[in-house]
Length: 311
Image (cartoon, rainbow, N blue to C red; front, side, top):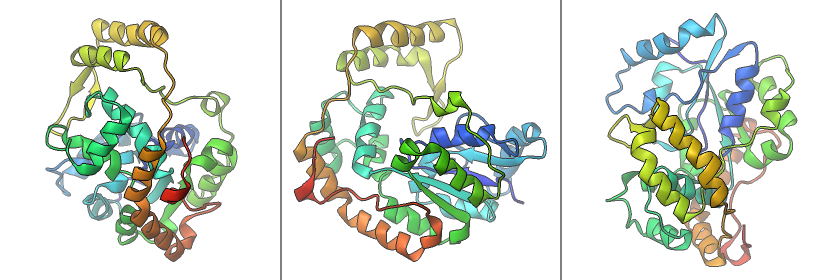
């Protein structure tokens, strides 16, 4: 049974929400809001799982093609086999971003969500590379692991042929969003539609870079987010108190403690460059083997350790 017609599977912190918003506006596509983590369920059953997913999305589809978004699917080893068993004909959409920049963005997001301790980026990245945070913060490993695109693409390409995979580059979407989406519509066999101005001008959730603000968010987290599984996945809590606290952060704390993302030091960039170097070579090889997956695509890999610059 074909449950899902297309899936935006990542990468995390790489404009997948923008792609989802554009696809949601297409009259021939139904994309349920938010993310669909069902395939990550460790107790996933290929017999009953699809029925539960269908019941949650089919009533709103009204005959349209059904798509979902879940950025973490890209790099989870078990997902390609699990997803292909249920959706073998699904189109797979992947957006990739320089892995070092993605890791830095993810680092601050994971601190905000409580999956990392609130410590400076330079120290935190060293501890992540050394594996010293995993025991206390199990999901902290995702900060680096979700940038190992070469290994991930090889796994997905083993289950889905090149014509079912479309790869986009984050930087291309950021600079040429109309062209990027037009290419995706063509790949999916959809008629072109204009991107609505509100979507084109939308900005992703601003990061929280002030340690004082991050500590305030940690205090509020039990009242604003509800953990839904043993892996730390959380959803917003509904209710007046939760809305009031989120408003307090957005309109008061964020304005009282404004701070842009701190510059990333050359040693930290070298550390990340060295960490991702081998995987970037795997990615380049995978892209050459599956050239039909990409359009207007260039190498994602970070620069060599000798040629890094602050970001």
